Image (cartoon, rainbow, N blue to C red; front, side, top):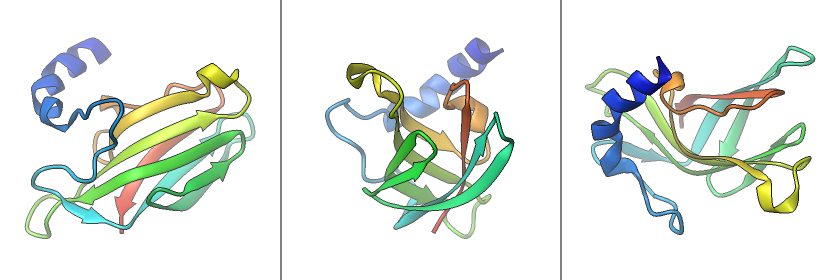
Length: 128
């Protein structure tokens, strides 16, 4: 199912895919915002938290360090959605493998590109 979804979304996400060395600042047709509101869950304790993550600032949650590089919202006259470019690092992993996620996450379609982690789940709620 994930493979089919990835194939269907590939043409839509291709213009959004930045070079690895450069984090994006905005996505075409979206409005840039200053911070992301994230829902983060610790699957072991079932603790769910809502975090406000300002751009380019590491926001900690458990062993994770979440850095939002860009957060965009749809214009007011369109269906509400949020799109955030994030880098998520896990401090419990070896230094050369700390980054466990790097890319865009959609609020309305979290399964399109999500963090796959045994302990934590991260989801974009909105951009403010």
